[in-house]
Image (cartoon, rainbow over all chains, first blue to last red; front, top):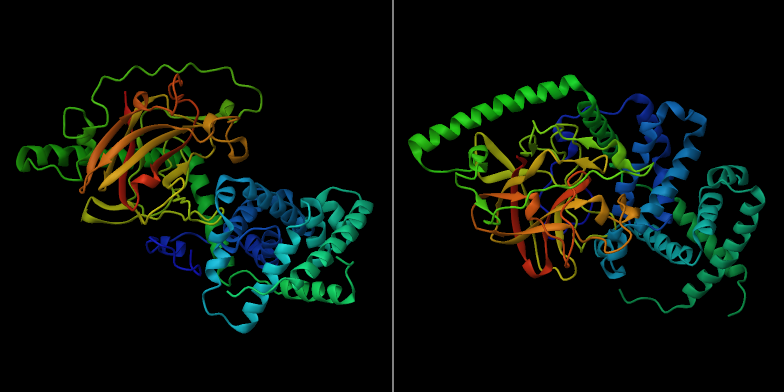
Length: 194
Length: 311
């Protein structure tokens, strides 16, 4: 996988493009171009490490590809978000996710590499936000990510998560309060020396 | 702790602003498209009877050519090489059998399957196309023969969740014109459950009851375990049907040497950990794997020419 830190023992893997494979059709290319950022952020904020989110992105768009004719273009965004939430949840329950300790997380290994200041800030913010989001239950977290991070309307969030709009509002309020408290706690914590 | 104040709210907003700028790696879009095209192509190949006939024809021609080559080598060179894998599968030739004792017959009864069980529509091997993968095509997919589909991966305990790298074949150190590529993994000391070279059948229920086992070439040195995993040892969350004693597959121990050798493993030789365990149910295979246990690390393992053994 290009772009990842070199892992011990990993031999050189040729890019898939070297295998003379046909590219996706135009509609699929458009869907990936339009929604990959959204899918990526939902997967990441659902608790997947960057490398895991890369694999999961492929799974999410594979689900869309299989049902492309059933999903109208206007519904693609909602479909992809709900699929991403499900894929992320499945992956977090898998044995690989459970078997890895926090100390071996790829994020931590990547932090050793030199990065531009802006990227460092984004990564730090993402890590802090993830830590805060981890204090929420799965539904609250999904509501918050979709409504606050992706700025979806309450109606859209309700549709994606199949819950009433009233529940979206109440969960969002509770999530925000929990997160502000978590952020306060994290800010009060002494800085890591790493 | 006091309730959050305006400063906490502003801090959260700043975090959200930064997180909104979190973008995927720049090349990820192209990789996703390539991956989708690849999987679509494999599905078409697996679904197309014409393609399967084509593959059978190619495989048949290849098998005949290898058989002739094997006979010629035996007659004139009397020097077994890695290219005579088909001839070497025969017990009378050179392969090293994992268990010399006569194998008990495999007689798993086809159970009555509940509604919704994916094995109700399991893909069934006909017994005529034993090649699983010879890696000569250079990709991470197994050969789409007899309805088989799956992708090679290399999960290790040191990987972050779900990041098991795809395994792409590499040139063999002793490459010949007819056998250029193999799978190779190499790594350091592991402490927990180790590493595996594996693929899952897609769909995750494959009926290999028409076959008696597998043969493959491998090179170490070291020890690996060949595992055939039934759906019943894979947890439900991972696509299996296991409720307890999960991840306890049927395995056979393989002592590798420092050169390529051909090994045969009969399904009846495979055993699960624990006493009184049933034999492998070859009607319901979820995946095939080569396991590397922590006590056998560091490791440097090559695998090639994996194929089913005919009865």
